[in-house]
Length: 173
Image 1: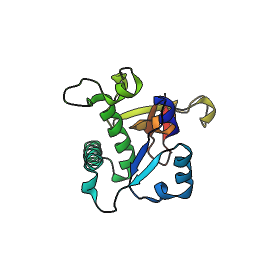
Image 2 (image 1 turned 90 degrees about the vertical axis):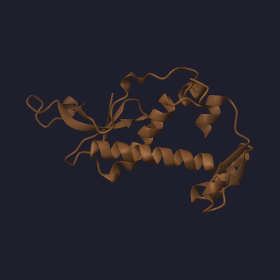
Image 3 (image 1 turned 180 degrees about the vertical axis):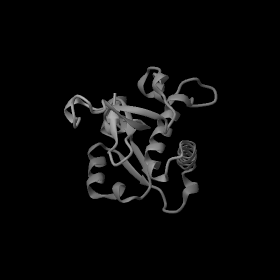
């Protein structure tokens, strides 16, 4: 929320969200009070009272399911698929029918660079730094990986790549 306030130069006056624990904690309420933001909680189980948010969640979920199915990836990668689906929507989908401005442009005042968009689950390579190689002379300089999206939500620039066969996910620039 602080990043959003810094970006737009003003704090919202009202925050509407569900009654999840992270939104009802004393620490979060104190934070909102210091920013003079009023908290409005949705009624539990009454999804029809927040149709725009529910429609957005449904749209992202459908896109993420399609991405996972097309890539032949297990549902364990749903979080990465949702993040990437949201990133694609913010970069490509206009804010309204009568506008050619995307949410990304509206928020940053510049057009997104879509040249780095890739197909979710496509094949790629991750470079292995010389110090991490078992045998510096003959070891592989790169390992195969699967594209999982961008690493922006991890506060990093670059691609998020999953390395199969027991290796962790990493960020490649």
